[in-house]
Length: 395
Image (cartoon, rainbow, N blue to C red; front, side, top):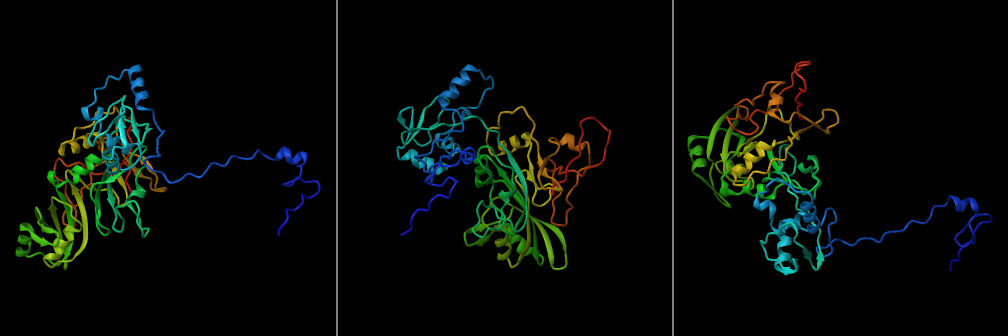
């Protein structure tokens, strides 16, 4: 049996009095906070914003002249709860269906909309929410081969989300996915509604790819791909096929398709006997992969282009925020983001557009595509115009 040791002479021990100098030096014991248990939906009460009641009082005290759209004033309950960080939208719908959510002391129902001033409780506990309108943001990212379009990879492979700018509220959502070995344009947005509509086959947004295959397509194979080939998950057909040139046995083609099934382009080419050695997405809907946007870099679409993209899928364009969108590109030395000109007019003043040459798996963008002007090569124009800057080339 171990006995407690006696304190050393002249020094304070566990059971003895401490010396004066030691007492003066010793800081008061810190309080140890209890370890928190894993969060559950019924235990979470976000505290990062004012309550709905408080928000309503603040709005009444400070009149806001901007007129919001109806869906902005009255968002759906499950969406508001998800934005508060309590759980996913699906989980919030389940809570509502189970009768565990109350709005103004009445059971909520799935699809219910809420407004400023409503008192919301989850499992009997009031929830503090933020219902302020958020600007819809869209990034155009140049994905590298070997990157995963996922947040957590069990094999710890690099993911595209590690290179994106942080969001104060919400998270970036990928518009569809590109498989591990596919590169090119990947759109990301902070709006779940926009992401879902851009991916939904109902809106028929074309995806355009530059694909390099082993061998050339015969007329019969080309016709078969346009009419439709049978895959294990159903029939698939290209909307168009254009020759892209090539050398030797490797041939480039530009193909369009209006859906995004897993490895669909690769499987279609394999169905007619051609292996794909390289695949690059160069367009998604009206957004093209900009020449000069280096692999692993991203570009934020200006507000006007975001509004146009939303209009294409039947969403109401956001209310102007009264500020220009600033695109960010990595610094050459540090890799950190730096601000670049936020409007095409500023960029045009310092350089000429760079087009991706045809015949090399690239795309010469048609008039009217978002991003067709590309990222411009900087030209030194010192002393030519106040406020002008150089366009930064993304790494």
